[in-house]
Length: 252
Ligand code: XBP
Ligand code: MG
Image (cartoon, rainbow, N blue to C red; front, side, top):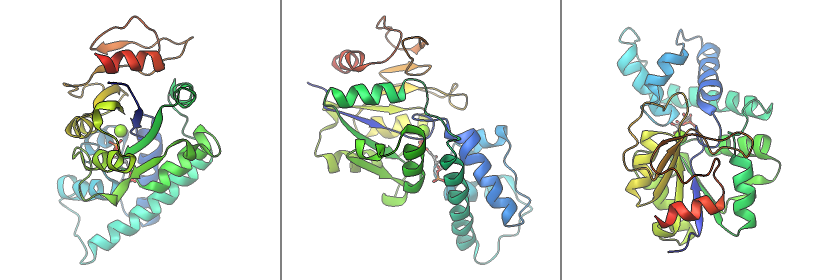
């Protein structure tokens, strides 16, 4: 089976957005609203078990703030907080404050040149993807992706496979001719649930996750002058991920 397409998660995979992007954006939104909620780096790691910013805020209140009296319009408040958080995230990303992870731009350029089709499948809000790509990958780079499947467009977020099903459906492709890129257990479960072979690159928040079923688990995609490390799965003897590596991995 020939490899035709690559499907990328965004948060944690294309860029390390969580600790220094989403987290401070949530905190700014809480402070704006006069709430005494503050998510430090360690707490945010626990909250990441829930995907989706609105879902994460509700989980925080239910599990960590028994003292908080929910107002009658709590769901509306969560939506407003999330809109403010999205504005703060966009401002941060627009300042170029969230760089792409090692090897990402190099691999995307090479994949395009090789004629591979590209898509995004993420639980994050669509605006976050556009602003991140525009300012961290480069102007006009959203057009590199023929499908950007993001956010509330599907009823169930990762670990449900829905967002991957949607991206595959829009591309008219079978999972067998694609590879997915993920950084987290929830993301991996979503991709595997859609029948996709999945390459995992870990980050500080996901190092200890259970990546059973991944095609390979790597420290990052690597660069010719900055080799990556194989954390689980086959060592194909190549210090960085390129299209030839992906074709070999996909065949296995
Ligand atoms: C990403 C998420 C998102 C972001 C915040 O997961 O869980 O909720 O943290 O985005 P994945 P929003 O990388 O598996 O897609 O606040 O826009 O929901
Ligand atoms: Mg992710």
